[in-house]
Each structure stands twice: as structure tokens, then as C-alpha cells.
Length: 145
Image (cartoon, rainbow, N blue to C red):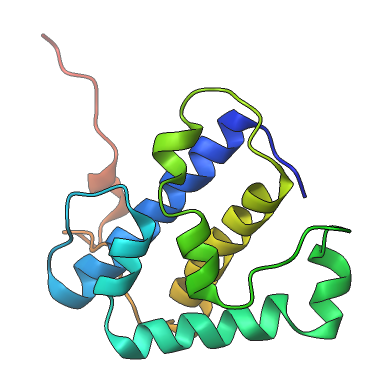
């Protein structure tokens, strides 16, 4: 799985934002940083363990390895290793260059795991709350001015 630099930059930013959203939910704040490893290590140990377990099941099981393994490119053995490999991905991928298949595949896997954890493993998490139950209040009418 090799994706180009613009997609890598967006994947890196999406990973960063997902980790920050999880940190906001857990601690009510998050550090100002693009460093994915720093963000990951600020998560509670229970979240780190759950992300690691999900990564093991998804990317290191024989069923998934056949789909996601790139011939000749080793898959990171742990979720933390995948995050560490891409810790500075947003900074590095903002501007086009060829960065190689190993990092792009691992970055995509890193994002996949944190998003799946937030969506599937934590179904009770509310990422936002609407102030109204009336859908008509969500539509703004054009103003006369």
C-alpha cells in the first residue's frame, strides 16, 4: 500500500486529530504537538493497550497480513512501533517527496487503528453534542443584510 505525499500528509493530520480527540475526551486537553508518539504516550494505559490489541488482531493476524503485507517491507510489530515510525509524519509529508512504502503503509495502519478504536471499541463516546434536538434549528436561513 503506497500512497502519495498529499494523501500521506492528510493521513498524518487525520491521525494526529484522532489522537487529540481521544486525549480531549480522556483528559479534557491535549498537547500542542504534531508528534504522534508524544500524543499516543499521553493516552491512558488502558487506551494504549486497547489500541495495541486492535493492531495485533488486525495487522499481525494471518488473515489480515495477507491483505496488508507489502512484499519485502516489514510490518511494524507493535502499534507503538508504527506510531514511532510515523511520529513526525505530518511535518515530513507536508511537502512532496518520495518517502517509501514502509512508512506510508504503517501510517495508514496507524490511522486505521485509532479511528476503529474510537468508533467500534468505544461506542459510547460522544465526539460532539448538539445543543438542540430540533433539526430545523441546525439550518440557518439567509439573513436580510
